[in-house]
Image 1 (spheres, helix red, strand yellow):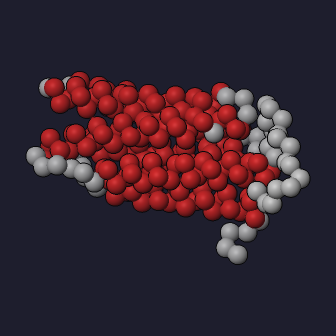
Image 2 (tube, rainbow over the protein chains, first blue to last red):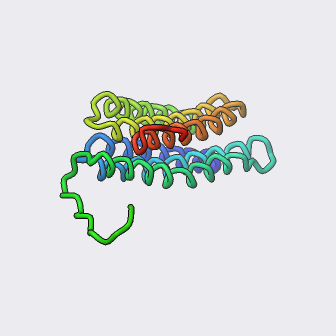
Length: 111
Length: 90
């Protein structure tokens, strides 16, 4: 019973964070602010759901179930990388932004 | 009982999140917005698969989630590379 409550709690926390991230993706005003929602909140939501799955299968099978950790680790490593690549692409394309772009100084080599 | 109820609620929340992502994917004013929506759709699909694994009490969904995580990252990286350089493999 206690395990069920714990698993439900983690599931609901995870789904809530994923929902908040997606609401941020829809509601925020420009691309650079929109980037914050999915890359932070949704990744945390996935982490909560994977913890719930880990607890559930550990109790269900009677032995420690750690392979969810693989997905969690992979996502937590790749989410910042893809966010960085997206921000770089958006800067390159000069998409619409609510703040003006910074002026590039003269004596800097490359980006 | 409490677990089944919360699984149904979590399914509903994830479906709503994916609908919002789909809206941004269709609407998104710029290409990076669409790529971001696609990436978030991938991540939400992984969450849905994990949820399905708990609901159907089966372990096979985990492998699909792992493959989807890798495919999502590679897809996003390739799209961004294409936007930055106009080419994927130089």
